[in-house]
Length: 139
Image 1 (cartoon, rainbow, N blue to C red):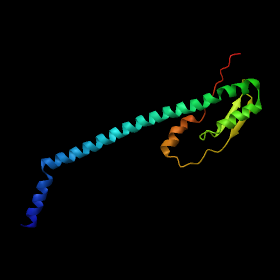
Image 2 (image 1 turned 180 degrees about the vertical axis):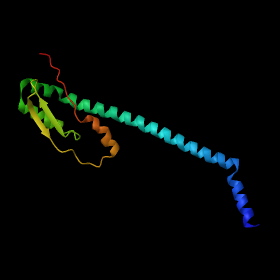
Image 3 (image 1 turned 60 degrees about the horizontal axis):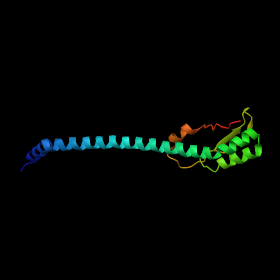
Image 4 (image 1 turned 60 degrees about the vertical axis):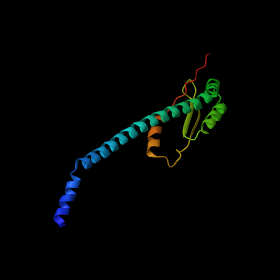
């Protein structure tokens, strides 16, 4: 068989309908897989943000009563202990406890921990730069 006949046979094989359909099927499968993966990542991200919100609210709720007592009693010593307790939670790097007249009772800040967090983790935590814990105390 000559080289020209082999080239024509290969060309014919690549032009076959089954080969074209296989290419299309692989491309569609890849696109569907990428789309479903993106949807799953989005859903997981939302679930993780909800979990982070719940954890932050639980941490703040444990400190609410002590922070309220420190603020209403103008007790700087208790305020310092509340702030120190808040720093047991690693993501916290700055905390301020103020009274009703906006006077600072206690303040502490540390540089944010330089960990090997991924870009996605850093993007998720951007929304938590400033949280306020309102004190609800009936007088």
